[in-house]
Image 1 (cartoon, rainbow, N blue to C red):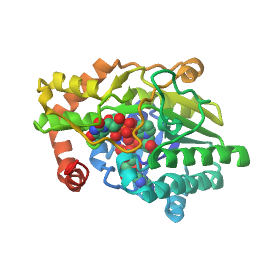
Image 2 (cartoon, rainbow, N blue to C red):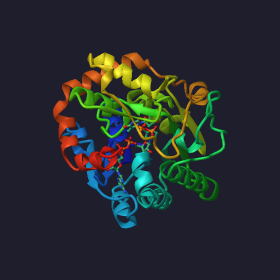
Image 3 (cartoon, rainbow, N blue to C red):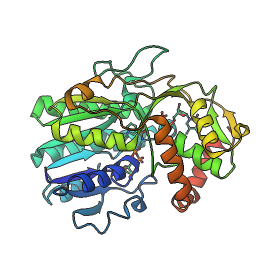
Length: 336
Ligand code: NAD
Ligand code: TYD
């Protein structure tokens, strides 16, 4: 698998994955195919831009002609990160999520089949399993029960990926990870929003009681897991990836504030998200047992490194926050 088509490589996880692959696999070439939506930012890949093993194509995964043109460069495997990824935006505009996440995946699967790629890897989410109560973990056998338009569109995509394996024999893998955090994370998501608002002494909106639980995974640990599943995962298999770091949102925000030496008076409880999933937690025994993966970061070391990154990369996030995101923020939080 020398040439990888990485879709959505200008986003948070995709850009971290491209950096990881260029560093860890000196024989691998990367074609980054990304539509550059509000979440795609080529600044994330500035250091890769001059690398002869890296190239970029601006394109939409739901556009078959554009995908075909990229595939004809000779692609050995596809890793699909491209998606609309924010639950709150999916509540506002579900149709966009179906188009990119479901239709876009089907277009990529058709291309993978036509060009007989060696492997197709779908980057999915633990949110396809729905919500947990106080006890229990999501395993790969947990039934799909998505609650938001975002997670429903990701579940639909996963089912198509499975179907292309069963029907056409495509070599596929699906990864379902918990909430990622780390450098280059778009500040609409909880951790970078909390860090950047705190750095600007702005209030941090906490939905409802703030006692919802997420499992947090450092993006570098996630990238190592994807690399393993891509190269060594079994065809047709799903792998859950989790960080063993369950935290309530309120605890996350308080930890960020303590790390930055900012007061808890910055916390503002706001109206809850409709259909808000109460708890996610992952059983990652399969990837640990079969592929020997485990996270290297603890939440404490990962968060400290992340806070440090946001302190040192003010220009990056200030640019992101000053663009169209400023209008989004006003729309979502102005009257909440
Ligand atoms: P992101 O929103 O930061 O990046 C998404 C990227 O996809 C952007 O670069 C965007 O320009 C691109 N894109 C969007 N629509 C496109 C289209 N039609 N054609 C081509 N490119 C398009 O997302 P992320 O956080 O990096 O997430 C990457 C993947 O991982 C997604 O599939 C997401 O569902 C999944 N995931 C993310 C998390 C998380 O915590 N961030 C957790 C679980 C799963
Ligand atoms: P988010 O980062 O949007 O990821 P996801 O919804 O995919 O888990 O949200 C993480 C948690 O933080 C989720 O329970 C919603 C909550 N949250 C807030 O309390 N305030 C915010 O401003 C945001 C963006 C999220």
